[in-house]
Amino acid sequence: MAQRLKQAPGRVLALVHRQDLALQLAETLRQEELEVGLVMEGSRTLTTPVVVATVQSLTSEATQDLLAANAMPILTVLIDEATTPSPARPTSASLPPSSRPLAQSRWPSSV
Image 1 (cartoon, helix red, strand yellow):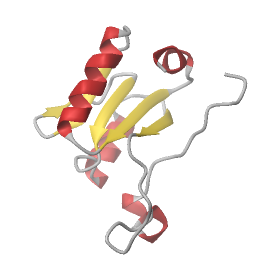
Image 2 (image 1 turned 135 degrees about the vertical axis):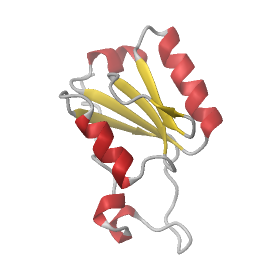
Image 3 (image 1 turned 90 degrees about the horizontal axis):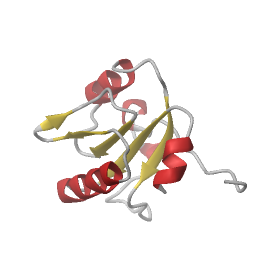
Image 4 (image 1 turned 30 degrees about the vertical axis):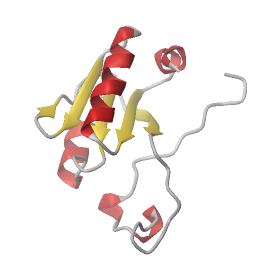
């Protein structure tokens, strides 16, 4: 995965649900020589090519700050846990626009 991220155009945003997962993923990516920032309680590094964020910390304000922090656009979004929608967990289509994901991306089959 790290090799693909190194070759990916634009910046990368990885979303996880817990701080321990954010720290673990960031450390794993750093070991692969990627420059990684964290956005979560107690950390707000927005300018790096790869940003790992907890979904709870990525408010509308934080999202705008993240997009403005670096001229290179976020073109790849990784989501750690995709869950089945339920009344308790609405789909992004039912969320207000400011809460919807920034983008969805798939790796080309040739990669």
